[in-house]
Amino acid sequence: MRGLILAGGFATRLRPLSCSKPKLLFPIVGMPLVESMARWLSSGGVDRVILAVNHLSDKLKIEVGHRVAGVTIEFSVEETPLGTAGPVRLASNLLSGDDPFFVTNGDIVSNIDIRRMLVMHQETKADATIALVSVRDPSPYGSVLTDSNGTVKKFEEKPAAHSAASHVNAGVYVLSPKVVDSIPEGRPASLEKEVFPKLVRNGRMRGWMHNGFWYDIGRVSEYVRANRELLEKQEPKAAVPNATKNGWEILRPSFLGTQTRLGVGAKVGPLSILSENVSVGDEAIVRNSIIFEETSIGEKAIVEGSVIGERVVIG
Image (cartoon, rainbow, N blue to C red; front, side, top):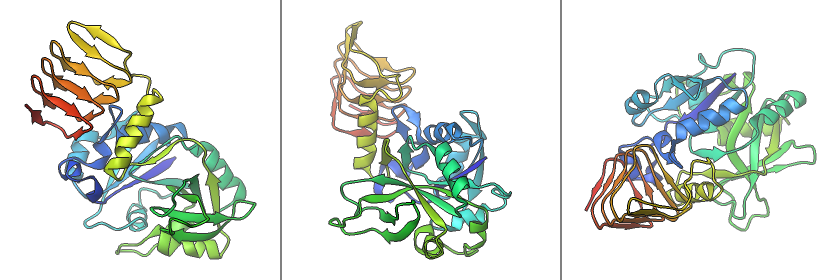
């Protein structure tokens, strides 16, 4: 089964971190986002993932390769960003076939049960099924109204904060092949504004309610929140316990990637995530921070409440 990850934007809300690093390579508790998403899609039966990319696509190709977490990876490169629907049309040759496929935004961290979502899609014979989540403030997202049978009745993009509708578009879809033919070719197009409204008018779209965790990490604040909450939940369970050894100290919850080096008297945590090959100098302190790979924290430096990019030298 196929899955398409929409990752063709410039991730402007994550700058300056995204100026040199594709969003799909941002670490989620030490694991690249693309690997986290591939594992999640694989759990739902997806064995082939297409990455719809534009910004820093060459770097992404080098870092990701053609296989992640047992899933085959292919690339569909946009000359210019094509919105949320244009990439689906562009990748149609890679999505060809009679079976439905998944489409997901490239900034989603979730445990949506896409296998059950697919079953409902097939049982209802819908043309499209959209994952929904409940939030307190729907204004940053698109709210979705459904009837008692789950048929989508209204799709409201970016509703007001006081809107009564709290079920929002989670950015995860199951699409039947016929939907591809309805997408304009050769220009930017929007699933939310051009494709879905037609399906709603014809009663061909269903909603799947998700009650587990869901994060849209397209903003730095949400990226930090996702890492912190997943770390506290011990997801994945590679977080380390409190430890004092060789003169350094780790306070949980914290995560240390492979080849992490701690100096004498160094203190890490709580709520700190160090990616692989990070060094923390003698008597340095790292608290409530996310450190990307191959970064060096110098002797007696203090890093607190920060997100530090890759290959940075501090102190």
